[in-house]
Length: 139
Image (tube, rainbow, N blue to C red):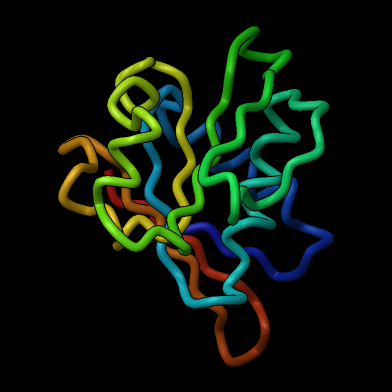
């Protein structure tokens, strides 16, 4: 499935489409170059899920936990950009998060692919030459 984001003005619409098209209680691995819009899109998804917390990339914390009013439970947001060893991912208890049944949004999953759940949904963000973003979802 593909979702086009023509501009930031349309990102919340794209986030709603993403939520409708997926089983939101999954692990989502977001791939894309630096600046492709991974954090911005995850933020829009969280806002559509009723997250009132400030959503930002957990670059130094590795994981942020937000509360979703819509789901009445947690949403986990990971950024593995700065990890040096796979053990760092294990040390924060990724299995507990990944198998919790709560949505898990992962930035830079290529650094931990060996421990991603087999059923993780691959989400690719790509900036097109005209500046639009294309989101490809592979379940």
